[in-house]
Amino acid sequence: MEKDILNKPGKKSSTKSKKSKILTDNDIMKYEIASELGLIDKVTELGWAGLTAKEAGKIGGMLTSRKKQKKKAEEAKKDDGTV
Image 1 (tube, rainbow, N blue to C red):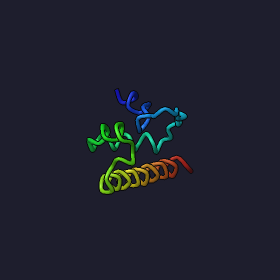
Image 2: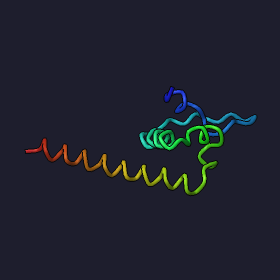
Image 3: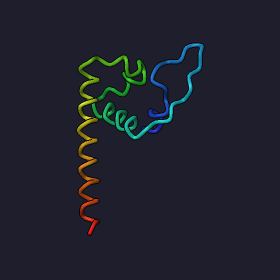
Image 4: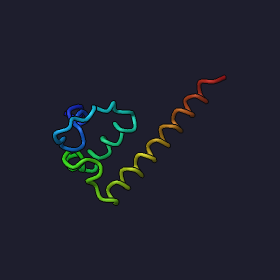
């Protein structure tokens, strides 16, 4: 089910067709966070611009936090493996 959500464009397309964007790791993480916060329906309906500043800020803050944690974990793993 989550993969279906990730493949949908953010906004309903009008008469012009838009190119499908290849999702990056950050994009996937944003969708996961939006889903956790219960905002995924709003994002798929209205796009990211349909979120309030508070909602977008919450997603951005959580995204930044997770990226920092991921970087720390990778550095720790690198330090443990290096002799």
